[in-house]
Length: 445
Image (cartoon, rainbow, N blue to C red; front, side, top):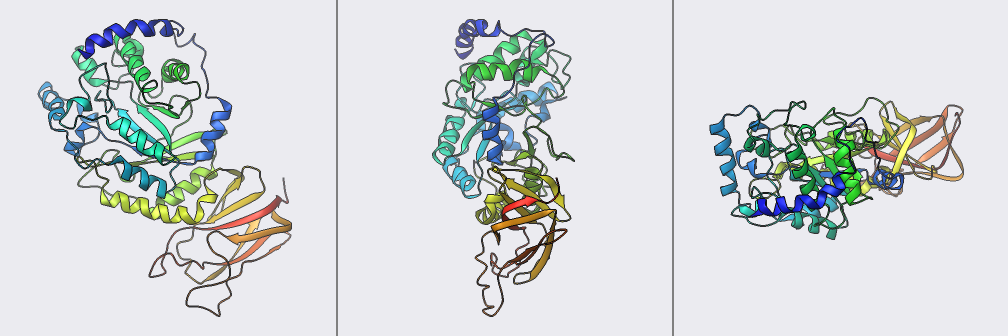
C-alpha cells in the first residue's frame, strides 16, 4: 500500500525536480543563508544520535551490508521483526542534553541501510512496522523541542535495501547506480523521503546529508531540494565542511562542523569499546570553538532505547564543566589566535570579552598559577575573573587568598589566579579552568 502511495506522490515532486539539472556541472550551487550561518555558529555544541534497527546486533550501523551475502542480508532484514525498544524515553535523552548544554540534536532518521526511523509512505521498511510500532523521530523531535533544543535531521541518500531490491550490488562506488546521482528511481525516492521529513515534522533547523563523500551532488541536488522545502534550514554535510573524527589543523574561514563518536563506533557497541575521557571531549570542544567550528558529539542508544551508562557518565562530566564554563563556548567566536601553550582562546561576538581556557590537568585545587596572555591588555574599568568562582573563598582554606590579580605588561596581560571551586569530592577535577577577560584589546595587530 505504501509503495502505491509513493508512486502516486512522485508526480507532485516532478515539477520541483524539473528545476534541478541532472548535470551537476550546470546547476548553480546554493548556499545556506548568511543569517542562518550566524545562528548556527552561535550554537557551538550538538548531540548526534545514531540509532537504527540493527543496533540489536551491536554492530556498525548499516555497513555490514556492504559485501554481504544474500543469506546474510535476508536475515538482516528480518531484524525488523524483533525491534522493540521498550525503554525508549526521548524525554530523558532531551533532559540530559539540556543539562549538558547541547544546543541542537541531529538524529538518524534513515541511515544507509534504508530503515526509516519515522512514519513514511515510501516503504514498509520502517519502525512503524516493528513490534514497537511508534514514530521514534516524531517523539524525539517533540522531546528536544520542549527543552528548547534545535532540531536536526540526519538523512542518508544512499539506500542499500532499495538498490538491493533493484538487483544492484551494494557498494560505496559512487560511479554506479548505488549512487542516486546515477539512479533516477532512487533519486525520486530520496526526494520523496526528504519531502516527508521537511514537511511532516514542523520546523527543521538543520539537515545532515550523509554519504556520497567527495561528490558535488549533495550540495547541487539534495541540499538544494532541502532549501526549496525549508529555505531557513542549515545544511551541514552537503552545505559546509564537516570533518569526521578529526579536527582541522588550522581555523576554517567559514562555519564548519566536526562530528565525533564518544567511543570507536557510532551506534551502540556492547563489547570491545573504548570511550574517550570527559577531559578529552572538553578539550576537543575548546579546540573546535577556537577554530570557528561546532562540535557534534554522538551517543548511541541501546537496543531497548536507553543511553548506555558509560556514555551518560561522560555526558554528565561535560554537563558539570558546561554549567561552570558555557560562556566560553556558546555564542562565541574565534580569537585571532587559536592557542598559546596550553591555553585555548575564544571571544564574545562583540569582541569585548576574551575567554582563555587553561587545559592543565595538574592544576590543583587551591593552587595559584600565573599566565601571560601575550599581546593583550585590559582597558580601564575592565575585569579579569575565573568563570564559576567568586574570587573570595576557597573551601577549608579560610586564610587563602582567592582573588584574581592582573596587570598589563609590555609583553601582554599577566594573570595570577587560583583554582578555587570544588567540583569533585576529592578535589581532583581534571578539566580546564577558564579565565574571563572583559574589556580587552590587542596590543599588536
